[in-house]
Amino acid sequence: MDKIEPIINLKSASKGFYSKEARIDILENADISIKKGETIAIVGASGIGKSTLLNIIGTLDRPDKGSLFFRGENLFLLKDDDLAKFRNKNIGFVFQSHHLLFGFTALENVMIPCMIASGMKNSSLMGKSTTKHGIEKQQNIEKQAMEILERVGLKHRAPGLVEDLSGGEQQRVALARALVNKPDLLLADEPTGNLDKKNSQGVHQLIDQLNKEMGMTVVIVTHNNEFAGLMERKVTIINGKITVD
Image (cartoon, rainbow, N blue to C red; front, side):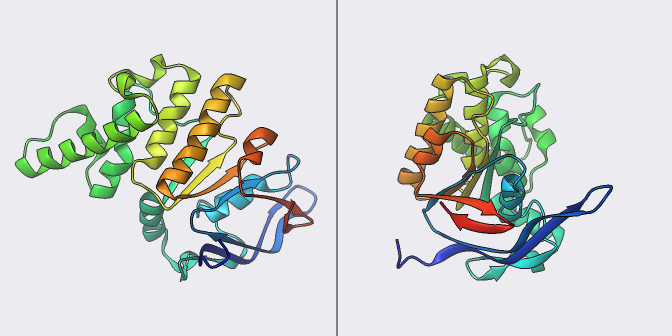
């Protein structure tokens, strides 16, 4: 992969937080380059800044200083609204707590990122569109969502309310939701932390397969050595710097 241009470049990033007594520096002039299609595990002890690093790469949090380039564009020069549009189009997120919307079906949860991208309101999920254009748009979104639910093995659970699904099924719905817009970058923060061993292994293998099939870049935060072992690189944070294990 040496000849492949980086899709992500984080340069000289610093981030800290203030306690009652003093400032705690998490990142100090940290750098990392990530190539398209690469898989990376961010590992290490609790409290070293793994989730902070992931949130900065995912533009959910801005560093105190430093730059984040996506295909040469400095993302933190964008306004918040433009940055939100960028995230919806280019980045899929999976968290330990899946953040699904209870009261909605698996299919509806997966449709939501597409509806946001297309400018449709989430309230459209509560009923069918009435215009021809709206109906066609909603049908296309539903088809797209069904295809990714089938890929994660949950087509048969599409009409079910997410609160009626098992923990493993809910996490696969969250993964489908993250992938439905076919993002360039999949970010996952302890995506199997709340699952048993069997369900964890299933999600690990699925992410590995989807990376190979779709060519998307994957960055995960994990304490699971087996999951980390599936990734091409393992990185950690030591004294505020990003290092390769």
